[in-house]
Amino acid sequence: MRAIRKHLGVTQERLAELSGLSVNFISRLERTNDQNVSLKSLRRIANALQIPITQLLENTNFNNNEPSETQNNYYKVDQLCFELKSKDPKIAIELTDSFLNILKYTK
View 1: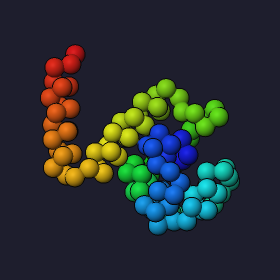
View 2: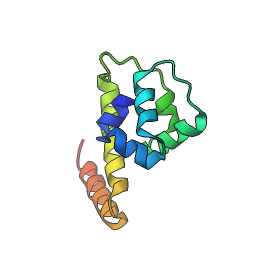
View 3: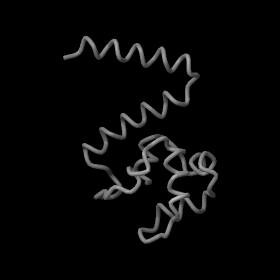
View 4: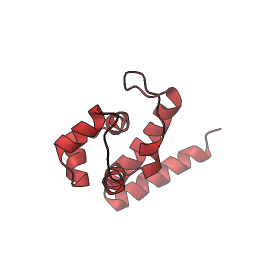
């Protein structure tokens, strides 16, 4: 969860605010591998990060909390989506349309 949060550029404080959970709880989840957490709390975290809950449940083999190159690429896409969703909808649509037009001309 820490690697996902960091790659999205979200602080523990911001995640706590977005999810309605405490900073202490978020910190404890990130520090402890055997922490029991409810599905409801996981759903709140996934919604706050705007990612599928399954992404939090995937078996990640991070070394020093660093994602693999493939995971890093997915996080970049997630970060782009996160940033777009935080923009004014009109601006987000314009940016998305521009990006899709660029992709049309990229092989």
